[in-house]
Amino acid sequence: MSATSLNAPAQSSALSGRETLCETITVQRSVEEVYAYLVDFSTIEQWDPGVHRAVKTTPGAPRAGSRFELSLNLPGGHQPMDYELIELDAPSRLVLRGRGPGFSVIDTIRLTALDGARCQIEYRAELRFEGWRALARAPMRPLLKRIGRQAVSGLARALNPEPPVAERVRTRLSERLVLPAALDFTRRGYLRMPNKGLSHRLEGRTVLVTGPSTGLGLATACECARLGARVLLVGRDELRLQRARQAVADFSGQTLDQMPVYVADLSFMSELRQVAARIRKEEPVLDVLINNAGALFAERGETAEGHERALAINLLAPWALSRELMPLLEAGGGRIINVASGGLYLQPLRLDDMQYRRGRYDGAKAYARAKRGLVSVSQRLAKAHPSVSVHAMHPGWAATPGVAKSLPAFNRALGERLRDARMGADTIVWLASSPAVAGSTGLFWFDRQPRPVSVLPGTDVSARQSDRLLKWLEENAGD
Image 1 (cartoon, rainbow, N blue to C red):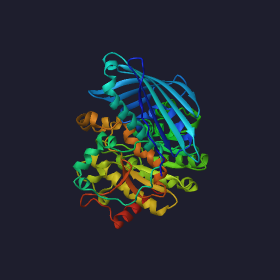
Image 2 (image 1 turned 90 degrees about the vertical axis):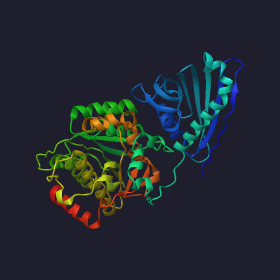
Image 3 (image 1 turned 60 degrees about the vertical axis):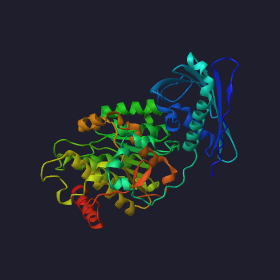
Image 4 (image 1 turned 45 degrees about the horizontal axis):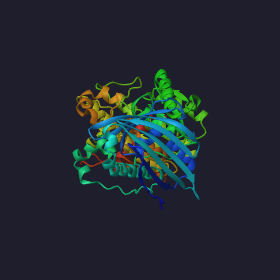
């Protein structure tokens, strides 16, 4: 049971234009965990509804002098705000200085360890308004108080333990109609989530991310590293991997030697087995495998091994890599997260034409069919390997370089309604880190909730079809 208290006195200074807000909450987390979450102040975007976006602009681990750029949700649109971390005393105190449109602020965060694994957080904001805002501060006081309460309530949700996720999947009417549910595939769905916190630490754990050079993969690698994980980066272009490695280090504060790079084109089964053998040799345990690498092709093509390209990278690769690395995952009771697509809701599994040789090729259909197969495979892996938690998820519609290149018309049509990469990666990182999903396996997730795999007639994969799919995979991508 959460022991959360909110106290929000808004105090007026004798000096015109100044207000002081103070909020106090108690959360069921250790003071060290709370400090680790708050010292990178860009996490404010996860818990303060008044912040649309927050970015740490100073590379490396947060320290005195680190700067942050925020985009505030204000009437009339997003407004910029700058913050600087001016004092820190781990793990008990943080002081930040901020400047926004027409005001400045000194934020002081004090952390006090209580009995057990609880922490008291005192958040004090000393605001100074300029111009007309100084004259309007009295009528603004109730609004400021409400904003402060909303912020600390969000912080409490981000830090307090979540209840275990119910495994019963309910199909809502909107999901059966597909289109109404698809509206939540945009950033609207992410913004409506009640809890966006990613605060559970991953120290001592090893996380492998495929396709980490851009988009969802890069956002996932950054966030897992910020949570303390040792991240392995697997991709086909060494130069891009090295750039991604530096980007993850700048974002998270991890050192480069904590992020091994493995070069392999995973659409080639021969290269995949070689890199998997190297990882098995160098890593005793793998805690999380994130099969993110994927691609959508406008025209049909085959790899040198004779596989249709979308099938190879979106289905054969995650299935084969999961099998190759299963000994490392079973050694530590690890998790597999397979990144699928909401487009699978519109496509069945085509066992009679896995290589898409019949009819006119449609890249979006080929991609969705492969992802449909991937979700089915995830369910079978979950049953075959009960000591490993296997999850599939879809990220919604995210604005990534891959989407811009593969679906330019779609990208232009939705524009700013698309999620950014960190929104799309949210559920991936949550599945990798949250204790709330411990013990769950074989589910399909969207925005941190288990969802139905099929809603349209003829798109579900029967047990017989699943058996045939596994046999086909063994024959075409097995040893």
